[in-house]
Length: 417
Image (cartoon, one colour):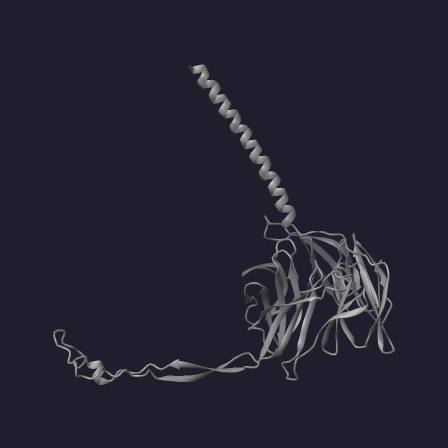
């Protein structure tokens, strides 16, 4: 009997061990798949070897190349336009609706970093800048009503059927004026189809209105966290600054403190942290924000944010208008503070920089309309740019060369290196 019991126990124990091993193997496989889905996709950059097109008009401004490098967004005389580079035609236009000072139309636009989708903000006059509401007025009790003796009814009294019913008093009310925001600011996403599809129109999708957006405010910078799908706006209005966080599907929050000015931003694509250059009074520093939580990243007033890519934050140090030092800090979920190391030292012009790009191949590109300075693996090189104006794609691979000829604008795409 004891032998049978022992054999049964050994069998049960063996099956339990096998079951646990299978469960661990399954959970490991499932976790591996989930990480593959949730982690940002580090796709290889798309390279356009050579492309030239001629766009009607000479007042093209703020040219931006889409993720797939097949659409070009720009503004012409206040009208937002999207140009299909493959079909060589404008496929979308959005213009102001009226002539009021608040009918500004498209006030800002930017391509998402991982798809052919354009986010843009549209401002128009509020047709109901003032509204009225009726509110009740509380009446003060009279002496008779407040004494209580005349209002006490005898519970045993018999109701007289001939007595008229008590007259109900209509409550007093008053009308109040509500002053609303004179400007309505709306967020749209424009989803573009594959550039070779002629039958499919762009999907212009209204997302939400931002009631707290200041009338006449200017968006100085927008960054997108692909990890959290949050938008961050640095807004300036009559010398006042506002840092706004937008969840397209949920709410809008203001994150800056009273009197705080935000001049630079970068969003982590790994953990969703927002890094910002903050100035408050005499204090000037770089901070990291996770919701309402704040951490000081650098308290050196000469440090600037160059960008963030693949979980790496890049800071530059500026002396006398020159970029002289670059440090990088790798984000880690287990440590709150970033540990920086110097990746480059030298001297390149920075004050007249048009933009700074953190390239897909780990290079740091500082450029203006004439020259691009490319920093990689501790060394730097200078690349001369042709054309009247030059833009570099967000992955640092492509140059958009702009030259105005007659009544049109020639646009040429070619690799930076």
